[in-house]
Length: 157
Image (cartoon, rainbow, N blue to C red; front, side, top):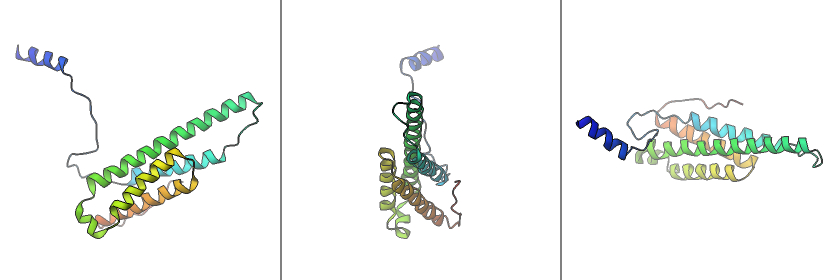
């Protein structure tokens, strides 16, 4: 009977589904995913800038162009948002006050990187996309230095 009552209560008040990485003490952090996402922002920005606008009288070419352009924009914005999410996790969950002694510009670096993520979403700027990737590299270097590990920076493209 108790199980039936509990089941009914659960039906009346369902728990919201949640997901996160991570407020638990797993200790698994790595800036590599932020690098991959930022690198995709650079790639999509370059692709957008290389697109040739077709003659307006060629309806099929205009449709194809608009489809490609919108896909590139959607991917660029999605990847910039994922970059932001990854760096915010590092900033708020991994880095501690003791790291500020080693990196007094830590907060400024993360804040500016988050702003570059936003800039990369709202504009098509090769300069800002590259600045974002460079800033993620700085975070990569800071992160691994706090672990006394020399992890090489590399890009896939």
